[in-house]
Image 1 (tube, rainbow, N blue to C red):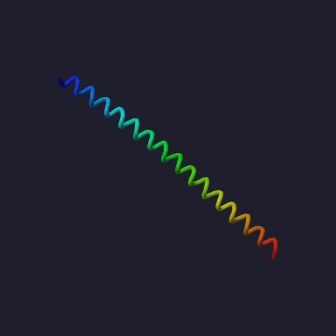
Image 2: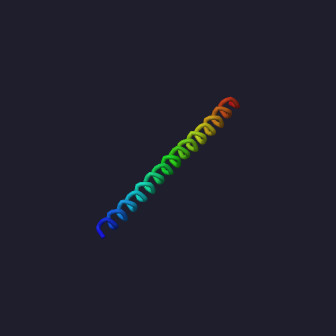
Image 3: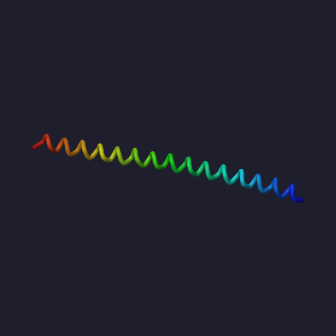
Length: 56
């Protein structure tokens, strides 16, 4: 009975570790996408300001 319980526990721990790893990977991808979006916004604002400066 203990062997079955241990095996079940090991399987559950393995699944939890896999889920945590996948969640961390998703969080990293989201963080990178957020940074890219921020940089795109910054470059757009810079371009607009530069165009306005040349119009002066």
